[in-house]
Image (cartoon, rainbow, N blue to C red; front, side, top):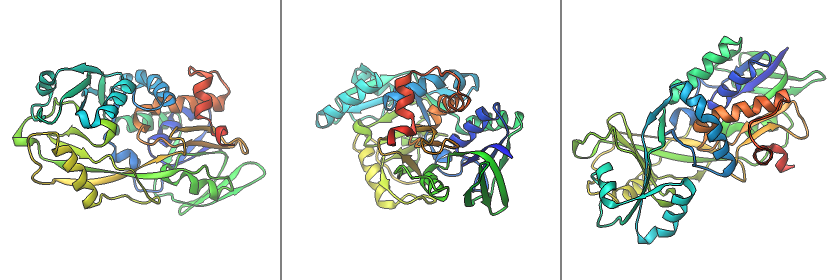
Length: 356
């Protein structure tokens, strides 16, 4: 019998596999042909330590050392720009992310295409980093396999049955018996819970779209910071010599293999274009992913209060990549019954018991 059966091979499941494989036998089941196919593989991942709710920030802070040791961080920087029309949102974002105010001349030096006739304020943080998502996922996968974990793809879950000694989980490839289920199924976490006879917690998958456009006027953009609009109304980020631009959409959808809609992309590109002097003339590619949130938009980590052998690792939203080392470490600490480096207020904020 397996000690821990993890359902879901995104960053939540793979990081959990790495930590839990040190506590017992682990098998990870991923429905798709490869790991991180859905949200984790479509992220514009940035490590900005102060981005998110207080509990997320605590997880980010607990994750920094792992990110550095895995060598997955690369300098990027974060630039927030605004105008009198969105001054309130600008002030809120600047305070939340602890960004330093800079002059418009300094902002233009960072991104020469900014339209200073429309933008009159800017704030910046040099301590924001690109995350090499593939390298991060593979670092956890290697660690899990080195400790004896099995990672199995093409394993969509078809049935979950509670037994006297644990659980039987049936997939298209066969059945597995386990003492504990780790529910790390991303947008499908509530569906997995219902299959197991566990009350769903009300997670909502939200579609987030991306457009890849050419670098403006053939400029070299690799050293540009990530560019945010106030209230996260849109953002842009260098990507392999081009720019990715997101409308920062949050459309509630059913769990599925997400794709971007043309109208949503057009609206986001218009919001980006309104802040720069170079027009968007063509689209190189587009895609979308699902950012799944609990009702309070805070991660859910730990045993279900009514069935401790069913363990939630869910609701990463847009924070999964940057928070995964800290989140997976907390999960292992809770299961092992050992002290956590996180404070009790943070642990309670993340616990599924808050919905009981």
